[in-house]
Length: 296
Image (cartoon, rainbow, N blue to C red; front, top):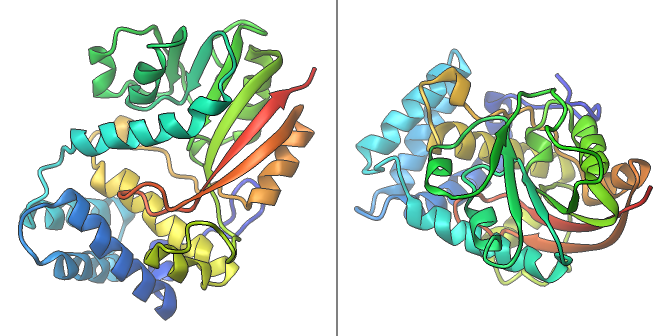
């Protein structure tokens, strides 16, 4: 199985069949659980139980259901709004210096919290392929569209467009980029945060122990770890029994340089790339921020 870029996608059991990756995942997952389960001290055992089930699951849906049950038994309440608010504040600080004056489209807005903060300074519109429960609490325009459909906005409508951890969740990230190019004004900004692999040492965040371990993994091992945690965060921590509300996880990951080439070929000049590293406590994936200018 391969993603849209022709890169091999590993199944969860295959990921954990790599001993070095399994050890990294266990240590990192234990740290994640400490952030979402504040009671008790058995986070390592909970992580081990989840991984043991992951190794022998008969279907992904079965594994997601069982792993979530294990989290609940361990004390996970299923909602962690304070963590989500913190996550939004982190992303806001990361993108704020690069937003130009004018309107903002938060495309693939998720819970809308980043857009809500930005709306204090800019005119912000939200859009996604599903309506998060939190959207009803936010007094901003929201437009829903389906996976694969055109973005429901006019050509050259926005000064800024945000794609914050969106592209690797899109079935067709190239179409998403073409649509982003279409709705953004010439000379406008596109700010993209992506989960990437294929990164090595020499980064400014190497004081982070987990990041140090990640940078020592081989390229394919980094990709395997990203697959595990992208799935675990979006389909286990954010578990939903409603198939229509399950987050799409096609694992369309790429390397930082791979994304740069894709942006350039789709009319977006990359002005800057910032290595954010492991910046989200509950999402242990290596993130980069790409600051792009639309060329038409």
